[in-house]
Image (cartoon, rainbow, N blue to C red; front, top):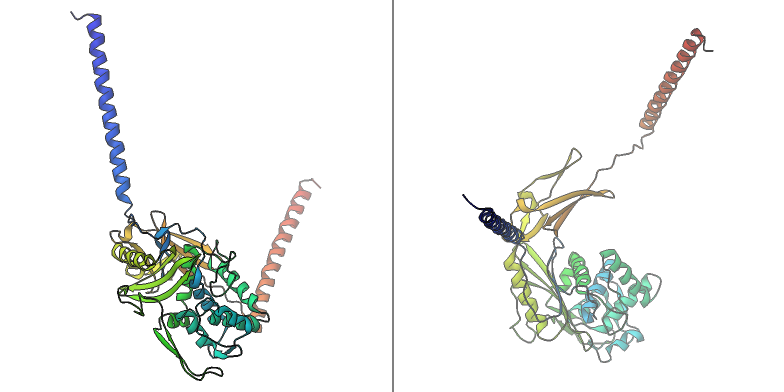
Length: 417
């Protein structure tokens, strides 16, 4: 016969073993869930670079493939000229004459320039090439002044255009106070905002042509009897001083440097169907080139483009189908399949917007214009419509009158009235 004490010891052992087993199973389940959760998100982990502020954005989709302190404000230096070039081509014709004022010539002092004279006349096209290729500060000032005067104002009018356009593009942490990037406490941007601006500029064909030009010649002017030769400064695109930074697939961009800004750089590169924009701020030379190269290699090796039309031909919304054009795409990590992509469909104003996401990250979107009902302006059709509306109105009134009369007769027969 087993004593009560031994029974208690036996049950204690059983309880202890059960508890240990339960904890083990729970731990196993927790670890299994953790491993499974980590494995689900296939977004690349990133790489370490020396540059303190950097971003890589896919130009086609706007997806951010790499980011490091992208919302910190810094001086942009001469990459500002990407934006001033965009504003100029959006508001001027290339053959317009630009006259250099005394204020414009002042920008040659202790800055990059091509030695223009007061009263000299260049075309807008020549000013833009000088600004983008040789980073000529007096040309960036002169073109801005010209646009401002054309708009009925002055140089400051152009600066106002820059700031209002920046807000339209989606910039939230930028303010521009000049057109060439000279040091100014009220002139700053972020890597993210500069990527938005650069993406917008790239989508302008005139800007792309100017940016991707390696050499350009300004003919004799009213002040210079000799030609002026311009060469691109971006050494990942054009080996002005050395070939060691040349990058296959580089499409161009813009360099920048001042003592307070350090080195800044915007670069575009293409591989297969993927076009990327890399922005680095506040970095040391030559890290602006070395880190940009590393970031491009990292992104091209870890991401891929998916053409939406290969997976679905139409988007259905409220019973109507909208065709997806063949150029629409999304960007995903290389080991992600289309079936893992999430999409949300919503109406924004007069547009239908389809947002594509992977694990909460934006990887692209497609916009469709919702067809609006056509309002006829044909007098005969309008008269027919008015007659039809009138007939419907009369019919409704007739039904209401009949019902009212019927109720009245009924109540009278029953003695209610």
